[in-house]
Image (cartoon, rainbow, N blue to C red; front, side, top):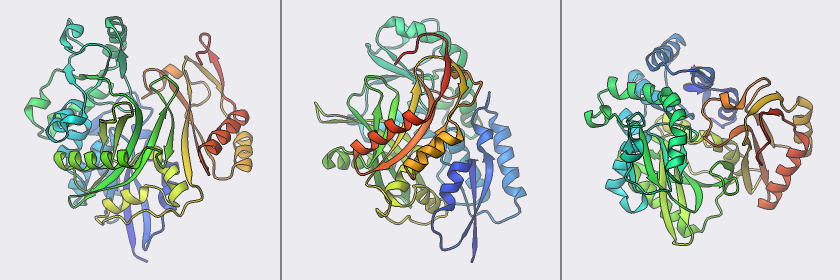
Length: 431
């Protein structure tokens, strides 16, 4: 059987196992262009060093390079087009990826192709003497870095006091992603008007309603949508409580989102890449709003796709990276519905214990195919976790399949009765 060599930027064991379970007509050999430890849980991102290390690892493998890909956000997604061009394998252009990822540049592109589906927006410099005066929007609105992941440093501003309260943290941590992201613009010939911007944050008027994510790919200019996933939030909070697939949104709303996706992806010029696009649907006004584009699959959706389709969305990523059009996903999974639940804490503290192997085994005995992934380790202070949103800390992902939503929620509650996180709270826990 002929071998195909896949190099992953940010390879981890969970996703390696998903890739290895994909049926192939050839032998797939998976290599780490970079390990997950190179891009997550790090104090800083040295883009040149990461790029050099990835290139060395690929050359050092001493095998043909058939595909280079990633399923994690920055910096993995941004390195893929550089490495793909370097080694002559299929991949999107760096400019199109950065157009998706630079939140202000992306909004300028959205404005050209789908202006009726985006909020008001304005770039600003948080280091200016009067950031409040630099933002022409009336509260409430969101502020966020021009590049982040997992809602890092994103704050809802309801009044001037919220902005002033957020400024110390923004000024202390804002360079964590902004500086390495700027390296790509400065060293890879991106447009001067974007490269020389002093503004590193964007303010956007609010989008309202139910949230969902459209997953798709573009291959040889043909944009295809293959799944819509509901993003369910924590009560009245902004943090996600779970991803649920397939979506329960009305079919006509999903079709409208698919149409907007095709228009905006074509307008940006993204090609030969998977993508996922986050949307809102305001049921009261029957209005669709486009939040942001990610030029990759969502690795947070991989297990729920596998539970419904029998194969994860990695198969789409892999086919596109190998330069072939993906086949439609069939519903050959074990479940009609699946959810990725995010167990969160909303107060700071130190982790004293995490679920034991026996507890996880008990979950899997009662609920075969349920996956429990702890995201913290003993001794960690929650506020020192990298890449968290501004309002919560993610303790675990629990992926569950079921007949319907009621069964999903019942299984999740049972999981919470079995697994235990012991956290020494700094203050009274907020629930």
